[in-house]
Amino acid sequence: MDGQPEALVDLDAIQANVAALRRHVGSAAVMAVVKSDAYGHGMLKSARAALAGGATWLGVVQLDDAIELRTAGFTVPILSLHGCPDARHAQAIRRGVDMTAGSPELVDQIALAAGRVGMPARLHLEADTGMGRGGATAADWPGLVAAALAAEAAGLVRVVGLWSHFACADIPGHPSIGQQLTAFREAIALAERAGARPEVRHLANGPATLTRPDSYFDLVRPGGAVYGLCTLPGGAPAWLRPAMTLRARLIHVKRVPPGVPVSYGHRYATARATALGVLPLGYNEGVPRLASNAPRLMFTSGRRVPIAGTVNLNHVILDLGSGPAEPGDEVILFGPGDRGEPTAQEWAEALGTISYEIVSRFTGKVPRTYCGVTAAEETTALGGAAFGGAAPGGAATGSDGSTDDQVATAH
Image (tube, rainbow, N blue to C red; front, side):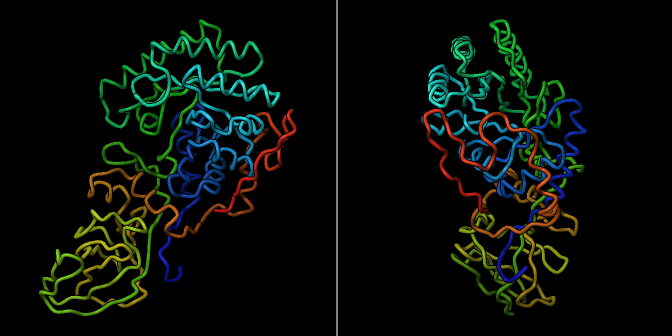
């Protein structure tokens, strides 16, 4: 670690978390959700570690991310969870990317792209069972199923999945959980009576994966749990390990007397003779401004120290007390908690948010480094046979003679 802040990602922790989730869910398959750059952990490396741990599917939101995974060599099934009109449907079909459809109009658009490409699209039909986001409502579900089965009969799509998403699985006992389970079972029954023969039916997100075995069906979709995080009260169970450590080094230290006001607005003043230390990261880099004056969210030299005053755009000032302190000393914002440092869960609880937001705030602003699973080992974790399209990493050519756009894979 040099003088720059860094987000250290433990790939072994990701691999072990997925292996533990696999054991936990028994016969259900595990889709590791690597959306949003794997919650800030780095999509490509995190995906490889997750597959090494036993995941057999990958989930993303944007089709571009799925295509990037294919370009990087991943051949396992990849589902784009976000059904979007006018997306890169043709490229996704050529690359064998599974797509979500929640309306007849989107089914028709994807089928049209499949006709141009000359191969069927792999579709997962999304039911809105109570989330109120994507998918077809109970009233619209029969029309969605009918449109998809008509496209399937025409050889333009294959209905390979039926799915939905929980709204309150991280609130144990919430009545909507059982209601959504019932609604999803009814949606499955209607689709199968109409002739759908899906490969997978899936509902369980991370919190449901941890708490509701009755929601597993064929496949579970943990997201934050892959990285040792969870939005359940109290966070993830002890058998999941947080994979990210966010750390920096002090760039300036000075001794001051009692009563010295600190930072913008003078919202903090030293209560005694102390050392003030400056860290080279602030809310531009991802530290929430709401952490201003937080008493126990920084760890250095074996102890917790407070943030002194307002978090700046590019700096945080710490009250280091009377002990030894000098520029270059390491400060840990959050980690797995092994040494007494705060966790992302503690940050979340202190600031009234969730751990997912804490870790993902630093995406693109703080350099990532990695430990664990070596590059050589990673190459064995790309998966099995591709689901349609050209060999991953190559440009697939459709019946219209067009080729995929090149997708950058550098992270």
